Image 1 (cartoon, rainbow, N blue to C red):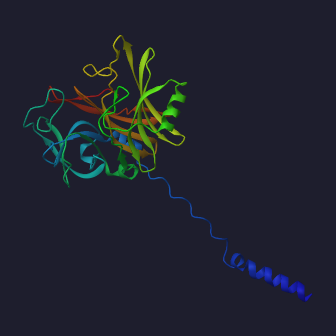
Image 2: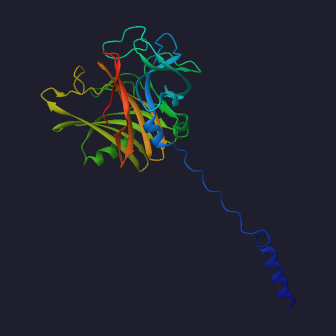
Image 3: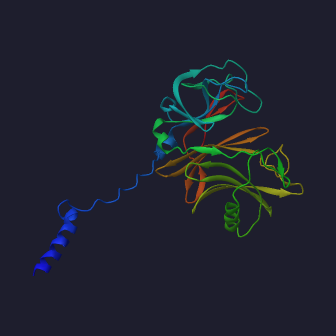
Length: 301
């Protein structure tokens, strides 16, 4: 009997932390993924250019495309940094626009000042409401020496990860990737890369975000003639020209990617959203600036 009581006492003492203090402490739930509200991003944004140049840092930005309320845009995303903004209203043109694009001085329209100085150089950035900041992913650009590799310009980017090349070739039934470029890596290890495939009846270029099993792609194709594939009318054969990632943003409706496509005759500014494993252009009620006529036109959704 005494031995039995001793065993029971030992068991009770072992259970004491559970009996007297409720349930054993559970592991804390992982913090929810920070995301931006997709509807606010879709309906309120602007592509803007700086008043700076290669020698002078910028202090102001002017819109070349915008949607929604310019007054709501208080954050600039570009040059792999975030810049707080203040809306200043509409400005008059004080100079001339270039042949292939607008200059800050040549624009008559919405403009903003920045609380800090923008980097030296030219280029475009994306303006967003402050509510989108939580979903913006930190980016590390992939940089390499400007060179020609296997007959293709690398435009200052290293090749894509070999595993990513294999992944993309498998998605195209083994169609071979002739040229690839890693553009940027995000804070979670996701990669934005370009894959230029061997030509069949059409040339094929794929821009993809890859992170584990998550692959989101946008495809571009061009006809093939006796000279090969011409991606831009005044570029070399098979030359895709220069891509630059401006922003990656996780939203409550999927990933949003903003990027620039530079060419000899102008710059494409693209804002695309995740939709069923593909990037599709954002359908928004936006205005775009015509630098020849110095006025804005409504884009068709």
